[in-house]
Length: 467
Ligand SMILES: Cc1cc2nc3c(=O)[nH]c(=O)nc-3n(C[C@H](O)[C@H](O)[C@H](O)COP(=O)(O)OP(=O)(O)OC[C@H]3O[C@@H](n4cnc5c(N)ncnc54)[C@H](O)[C@@H]3O)c2cc1C
Image (tube, rainbow, N blue to C red):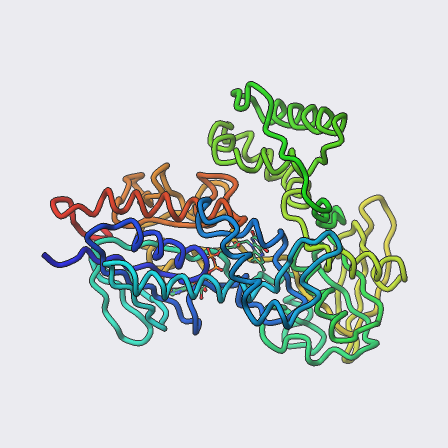
């Protein structure tokens, strides 16, 4: 009998991890096609970064394809030439923070390994999916792929330029709208004045990149609250499992109070807040669905900026660059919003309104947008998703985080009907699952989606991928 065919659209970490799990878990084997335009699977937006200053933001030991493989990446990395070539990867506390591209290479290798050691047929098609018709995925290269099931593993659309900036600086040389583009910083001079819109992880990457390139000009980074990502705790720290009851049914306010109590209790025993947050995060996929929609919205409006800076931490190498630049007065981080922006010859002229009052004029040579992927506009970001949304095959989740799915990660059409043959894996499903962005959760989710698909793809239950 022919093997069931699975087409995975998007071969970043999520899609590749899913392909690997499917291949490993299927005793009879599947025919798996990973559609991904990038040269190698497993890289995606995060791990295709080529700048050596862009490091994994947790120690290598905490990056894995499945919980049972914890430590495997770290061992692989230590025996790779990349480790020998990068003495800066080992931080003072002995922990390893490899360049992000190393993790991409590791996942690509695991994909090849699964292709050669499992009964499944794994293929990476270097192409972009553009349409889904009935059972068939069409690609930009004119390939038609028949599928028994399709999984959308597309997470990070390009950043959106704030409207006022796009309007004022359209095609102006001062604007760097997408800092992830190769060569994005080539035009920046060593003493250029730089404004960065956003103060999160992408800002940290940009500051680290500029520093590595020898830039020593003034940088002003601003966001509404001016919050910077926090560093990781030093060295090994004891875990802090939430005390009993670990998962009571609480409101958002209740969870906030509970988390603060846990942090205080941990501190009394000399355990860092990072350990508490790690455990809250590990339970995130149970806590999030237990909150009401109103509480989820409240979280996104008020708490998310705080959660993000504590939850998504930065490598100590990057934290050190930022701290040094701040101490030397080269980097200013402001809680401010952009009130006005206009071109000024080759430069740009801004007026920032401080959160706590007062305006500040700013003249800069470059304006870099680091507001991160425009997740709220995911369905509009490309032809395939646009088509599926237009036809009502998929819909945006009500929180604007990605695509609406049920608890099995199956898409829900405009009528609210679940489609067990069109699933979403990875961060685009986090409206349902909550904490689904950091590697451990994405890896677990990919494995859960693989199990779900295998359950569906029994020979008697095979049917179309879209309706
Ligand atoms: C800059 C950055 C750094 C991060 N660093 C860390 C870290 O250090 N540690 C950590 O735990 N987490 C980190 N994360 C979070 C996490 O690892 C990522 O969110 C995760 O890798 C998600 O990968 P993905 O495959 O779902 O998405 P993506 O990386 O967005 O990959 C999706 C892929 O789909 C492809 N694609 C899109 N549309 C189509 C189409 N129509 N047809 C075919 N292919 C398509 C794209 O080319 C892309 O490669 C980081 C995230 C980002 C954005």
